[in-house]
Structure formats: structure tokens, C-alpha cells
Length: 569
Image: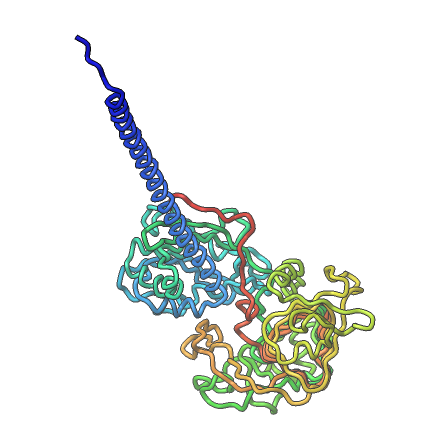
């Protein structure tokens, strides 16, 4: 029996079949889209996590880099280091090299437990951990590049020569860094580090977890610095690099001359010494200027602690004051006299009146102990920092141009007037000073003037009558009457303030000659590569702070090609 299917029924069945297929296709598409969506979602979440991780890693790196920069800042500002670190308890480990003025001394390791009062706050030596680290031209204070004493390499050869091995107990063999601040080992350290980096921590949510300073890995730099930064989520990164000294050494004396030195008028040098490679002429050595009036018990008076201390720098029966820090040393003669005794005898002065602060024929006074500022490195740094100035020639002779002059040729005196900071003033042809002096500029300053600039000058300086000066607050070198030799004090807190009227507050290095004519008065120091001369009544009050480097100029910079990231902390 045949069953006939009507046309309408056939069409209905076909439509039903198609609807089933459509449903299946729709389900397949929905599953596919779901898979695609899930995949994209996973990718999106992964990318987001990667992005977050990258951001967190960037924060950790930023904190590590900030830590390195802060070590450099501490080297240039040791008192800030004391305030930020020494004032906080729990400084558990550091290595300090204590030396006397001659550079003799020994190494000591100090380990302090969590919560103990820091060694830094308890002793002068600790307060000066980052001090006395400048590249010293005179070779009579420890330096970053080698403790050279009178031209001889001391032991240890560098101020930072510690070692560091992660995981070893601080102080153990192989892990004796010069400085270790580790928040992972000591909670007090983390508190100190968080305090130091408060602003950056608030801005990024990150923190510095570890700061290590130890000896140069290459042997050519001043120190190696390793810093670990951490993000809010705990991502950490560690960077390590070496620091090299900038070629602007500290100045340990009032005046340094690479040639001769002479005073046609009165000799007025205070609070520091004079070093001259050539002969020294004192037209009137009996009129060496005194310090302020003697006051018993005051560091610049003649009676300190009940007795006379230091060296007399006034004429017999004349000034009754003493300058405890003044010495004059030359590789030549003093006013034509071969020995100290000859000079005393010529002026009828006995040893009890003139101490042994005047020393002629001193073989330790050489050109490299007086004038060692490095032209190339200072020029490069100045160009990077915007401290560089050209010297003019022809119609622009005696003028300079650079940032402080708005790029315009400006008279030397006007360009420096009432300015502060550091300036590098180049030679006339932008090349290192020529042996014959042919590319040295010449600058003359006269009339009312004051500057707070410290400068490298690729030329000659000539000062004449400058009128009245500007009152500034100066600080004497430190003086501690409790010491056998009070002038040996290294505690900056023992300095006393004085008000001086000066024309220059800073340090001037001249690649040529310096003529201190007229009444130019300085609170700072001078170095004259080709000789120092004076007439009239020039006066220099030494700024003891200059021995640690030129004010406003960092003592070190990052060494090229030494930056690398450390995967194992």
C-alpha cells in the first residue's frame, strides 16, 4: 500500500529539517564565538597582567635608580647622609677607615644590631663616613681614587674597597661592604630607607629595599653601588654600576700656585695654608695679617684652653693673635732665604716666635699636588650640565658667553656678578691650555663686585680695587680644645661662624696666573697653575668645606658602560 505525501507536507518536513540544521549551525557558531571571546578575554587578562607587571617592574627600577642617585648625592653632601641615616637607630653594618691628617690610620668594621644607637651618631668618625672622600689635589686627605700621602700610595689604596657577596652574613669573609642598608635583614633599615625616599615612595608606591656600597669591581673607579628597588606588589629589580670621580679635586689650602707666589704688600691668608711649586716672595713677612682680636677660649684667639696654641703670624711685639691652621710650604725658597732658620734670623725672630709653619725647599710640593683639575672631564661635565662658557677673542676679548649670559657675549665681571654655582670658562680656542699659554684668555675685574661662583677659568685673572665687599657668613675650620692638637678636629659641628666682607665666595682655578691686586677679599680658595701674585692688601679666608670638593659640584658620576641589572640579589 502506497502512502502518498502531499506537496505541502513535503515542504513542511523540509522546513523542519532546515530548522534543525540552522539550530545546529547556530549552536556551533555560539560555541565558536564563546571560545573566541574566552580566548580574547584570556589574552586580554594576560596582556593586562603583563602590562601591570611591566609597570610594577618599571616602578622597581625607578626606585633602584633613585637609590643610586641618592648615594651620589650623599657623597657630595655628607652632612645630609648623617641627618638621614646617622640620626636613625638600627644602622647595622658599615666599614669606616679612620685616618689622621697625615693619612695614617686603620680600617674598622662596625656591626650594630637592630634598634641600637648608630655608630654614626656616637662618634666624629662615624659622622664623616661619606666625608673626606673627594679627589684631593694636595694629597694630604684621603680620596676617592687613592689615599695618596705626599705622593705615596697608602694602605688601603682607596677609601671604598669593601666586598659584597649576597647571602653571606655582613662582616663575614667575602661580604664586607663599606655600606649596607638592607630592609630585608633589619626592619630598622627599612624604616630608614622609607624615610629617605618618602616623596618618591608616595608617588610610586615603591620602596628601596637595599643599598650597598663597596669597592670598584674594575679597580678603576671610586666605588661600586648596588641598589634593589621594589614595587607595591613585591616586584623587585636590582641595578649595579660603578662611580668615578669628577676631575674637580678638593682644595686643602687657601692658595695653590703651580709657579711662583709673591706678595708685594701685606700677606693676608687665614684658616688655611699656601702651597707653591716656585719661590715665594714675602715683601713684608713681618706684616702677615692677623685674625680677629684675641679672645681667651675662642678658636681664633691667641689663648685657647689657657695656653698659646698654633703659630704666630704677626710681627714680634705686634699682633697678638695666632692662626692655628696656617702653613706655607714651597719647593723653592721663601723671600730668597734657603731655610726656615735663615728667614727667622734675617728678621731677628726666634723659633718660639715663628713656629715651623714656614717650610721652604719642600720636595713634596709638586705640580700634581697643587694644580690637578682635569680640563677634559670638567669640560664634558659642564657641557652636559649647562655650566659651559666660551671665551671671546678680538672685539669680544675679556668677555664670555653661556647660559647665565643668555648666549650673548658679556663682560666677565658682569657675567659673574651676584651669581652662584659652578662655571667652566674655556680657553680662547676650546682646546686644553697650551704649554706656552697662547690660548689663555685674560680677564680683569675692578670696581664694586661680588660673586658666589666657583669656576674653572681657562685664562688669567687680574683683580684690582673692588671697593667695599658684601657681608657673608663664613665658618672657621673645626676646633676641638679637648684634643691634643685642637686643629686636628674633624667634626663639622665644631666650626664657628664669622661675618666677613668679601668680593668672592667660592673657589677659582686659573689655568694661567692670578694677580690678587687691590683689596680683593675671598672666602674660599685660589689655584693658579702659572703662578700667584699680589699687590696692595688682598685677603683670602679659606673655606674648610672646600677640602671635600668644590661646592655645588658632585664628587662622582656614573661610569659609562658599567650599568647592569643583577638577576640574583
